[in-house]
Image 1 (spheres, rainbow, N blue to C red):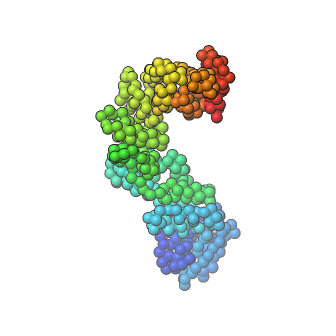
Image 2 (spheres, one colour):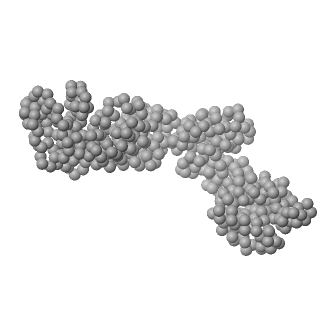
Image 3 (cartoon, rainbow, N blue to C red):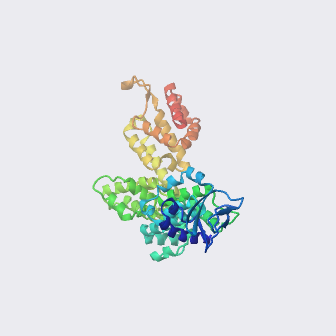
Length: 478
């Protein structure tokens, strides 16, 4: 592959001498011959070698040569451009149009211009140089994102240490791709695609008659490098101070889409740092109510784009902060639920908490005369994570209480003479909502409760009450 670099240098100089189409074609894909010098060149692919460049400008090619050949000459010197035989397929694949998506700051660089010229004469070299541009862009983005993030990500993932900008410059291509992924500059699919592109490029570095870049290789590498790297602006990774500023605003906090996107692309260490800060603030009684509420709201928004590995690490931190033998408070459970860490806390602590909540439900009772208390209690259960958060041992009894509240008792008397069933107006809609949020959990248990003696007794009171039980089954199946 070394002959390509030499050809490019000569071709780049010739571009100024010929200009126009001849000059544009002169980089990377031309060979030169004349009275005093001859150069042999290969068109990419097996059997595409020029057999001879003659002194008088005539070109003789072997019978196996494939592709179109254009000649521009000067006295005593001939310029032979070998156009790749797959040039029409390359153009039809949309690669020239894809190049327009590259950011302007890279469009103006000579490396990208060389890629454009190489596409039609030497796709293998074009692929290699475009990947080189993508790796150079990632080096710049790593420095812009911050050496502190790069250092932490490198240390956590056993990559070479990063202490100075010079350390990034000495990183291998493989390590640059790996570090970019660990810092959040690449998503996992993008990381896999770019790693595969690098494997293809390594094959091309040893290209011979057994391997060359096909159109499918070009499309894969070009799309990956441009869509995952070269078309995207550098990002400054989100900092804890930015989140702190948002939740301390004088009013309800709103998450700006750009802030959520920056958090989504932040490395695990930064997501964890922000998660710890928000949990601590939301559960701190010394903080103003507005700040705590804003921290709670922000926790729920960011939890939707938090990576699973970060959630597990945050759960460990929360467990250490709460303690292993301390009873969970309602506030801690609400924040743990909205942040996604509640299922990871000790089962014994979760059981004790929901057993206490069940006692509260039983003390209130499911009779419709306690309607004023039902709505608030059940909305609390939603904040605690609904049915999905309840351990199995307590789930059966809590759902049974909800069923008895929902089905009610026969009406048709007193002020409700025209009402077929008396039930809790504030609680019944919330029960249906809770079941609708977890139909996979509620459905089997609701069917099982159909055989419970208390539920059977309630449904046997009238067909209208029985119909309400059937309505719950329909909710779970919808």
